[in-house]
Length: 345
Image (cartoon, rainbow, N blue to C red; front, side, top):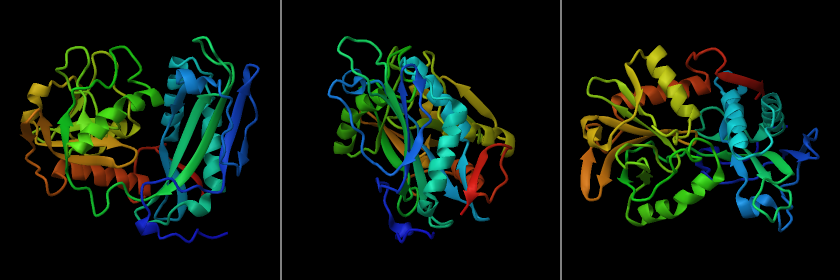
């Protein structure tokens, strides 16, 4: 076998079907053994629970080819753990963490020729998803589910480098207090679609959501957590009073990199919108882009401009970005257990 003949340096961040995916079904109170399949189709009854009551959750992680020719993933145990939490909150059966990890290994190994070569800037995006397949009419949990993992090669989230973006303070709410904001459920993202379309129409890259209770605290964007840098070079990470921010694996890794490797002062606390103008850098962090630098926020016509400017990443965020991506690609030594080796490239 050999690498697929793709223009790896120029593929976009879009779905390209690969050869294999993993599927396991839950029926009669248990998960079946699961299998690797070539079938891309999902066949559902018109009365499946996912279509009516949005019983669905998902994860996102990547596989990389490292400098020394290994295919690895980054902290997949945290994806497995977060999916357990999402399933429990949505009254779905939990797919065991050990089986989650084994399924990731199997589907990536089966699609190893789709893993982009080291240095191309591309990666293999892995999408585990679970949804209700059982029939329901009344509002209640379904009794049958499917767990599936597919993957697709994707290019870098930013073409030509990570240029700072402009975001806006949204008038919409992303998640209710004590709702589902802290799990990775599709319904949370559905709620953000109208708001992001509006933001794009107005010329902004993303929305910054405030807490729905008081609308005074920074929470996150539609698809990423937020980080700030102080004038003293410290890191400030917004927390929620009402547990409505998704526990991003990238954000948690950035915090550990900042504290333990770069030896920065790190604060994880609620952050008021009124204090944002005191920060010098801002970033959005998530699996897709790792860290997206923000140059300014538009708050209903008032611009909050960061000292890092609109031309390039600020120095602290760049150091965080370079260190974390270096760990992921194998050129920087990371904490034990962060890199999960799957096979030889």
